[in-house]
Figure 1 (cartoon, one colour):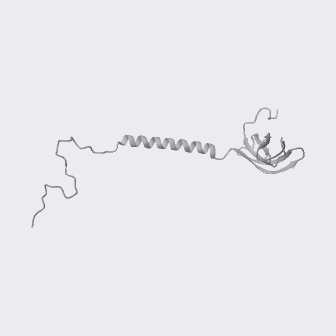
Figure 2 (cartoon, one colour; figure 1 turned 90 degrees about the vertical axis):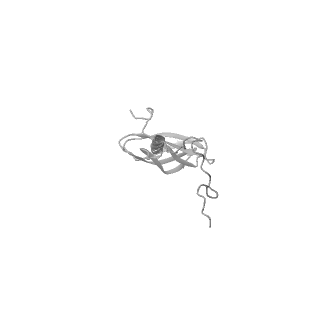
Figure 3 (cartoon, one colour; figure 1 turned 60 degrees about the vertical axis):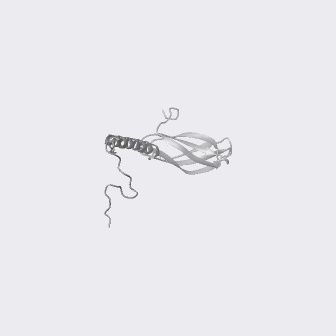
Length: 149
């Protein structure tokens, strides 16, 4: 029975290179400052995205919904909207619009929502026969021509 030769590498294993021939072996250590910098950048970007998303997609300080609409003679439509706001003591402005049968906007109007009022009705004139009315949006930035003196 023969004893295994310990100087030869095992079958299928790579032999070790001669010492000193290729220099010192590199050890792969993670660069901790790079890891920390990447983490901080990722947190900053994530925080910025979350803040912008909250500002754009979060609850609006003033918003309205259509409560009803009725067709009026002469290519006009009356719309009634309900307004919810975080400060009922402030005046607001809402843009309402009508659409024709093709879905195109055929009339638009800005309406003043006085302080303390939660429901407003108005008539919107249209260039074609309107089939629906809706709220485009609301804001606290009331234009001077709409504000009461």
